[in-house]
Length: 199
Image (cartoon, rainbow, N blue to C red):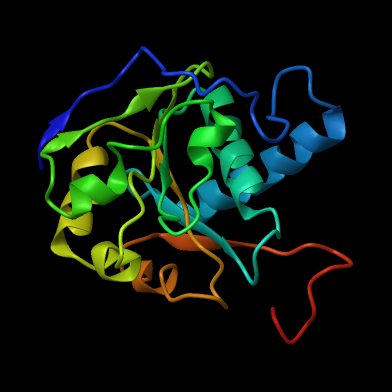
């Protein structure tokens, strides 16, 4: 499945990250909350080599991407090699969190437009990202291809955990097509915002 080519030179987009990231100086309660989720996911992985977790939500603006980013950072802080994949190819935003370009990412790999997997290092040690790439006309179809299977199998050889940010599950089917490819899902809800019927 192509070549693993980590890119240590991040191309800046000129803006700051769009949401606060988990750091060593983050409030204790916040760090402990992510540590708790991380621990539960470690047990959910049941010793599987490089567990893969997809992060989704009911609707847009529920905070799924921010939680995917911070969950990935939490694993990285614990000295785990983590790959964060932006599979929200309809409305990608991982690249904005890390102030880099989105092109030459997941969509190009899955569509067979390149054999090079353009992984980008981040300022967080042990954390690498794969951006969404150019917005394709058929995101769900791309995620269900054998190329996606091959990609996930390939990156398992380089990382301890893979976190995949996906679109909201009540809006499009993208997240559900990964059901047989991932270890499990992290479902993000927002207190005071989400209705039970949506969840």
